[in-house]
Amino acid sequence: MAKEKNKLSKTYITRTKNKYKKIIWEGLNKQPSPENSHCRGKPQRSKSHNLLIALNKYNREIVRFLSDADVPFDNNQAVRMVKTKQKVSGCFRSQQGGECFARIRSFIATLGKQNRKILVGLQQISLDDEVITIAE
Image 1 (cartoon, rainbow, N blue to C red):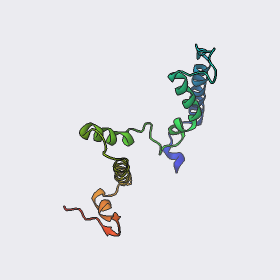
Image 2: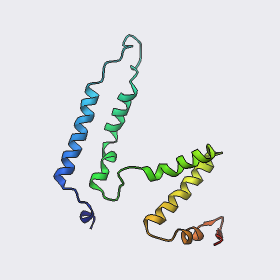
Image 3: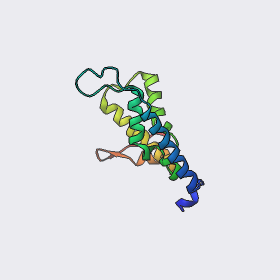
Image 4: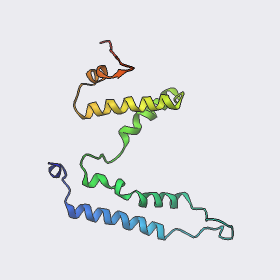
């Protein structure tokens, strides 16, 4: 069933992944040597070099959307509400408040993806053994 969801051919996926790896490796090999080579310790890397290292390290996760149809191309849904909240109120007052907001938004997004009624799902959540009731 999962294979039916994926509309990309295996050869296309393989070619795309290989092209991605090639681009990253070319970028890593073209990085200039650090200017402060006379200093002790590890040479400082540029921001672009650190990005290339991260893209290489997490390459499986980055291109997973090619082979797994359940993985979205971007993480826009995860970031959108947090950024909107920051624009409206400026910030969260505490770390715990931000974590609670993210947990609630994640739950709501999951209900939506499962085609379930969000209001009913929220009514079924319990905190401290008390059921939350939402006025209609």
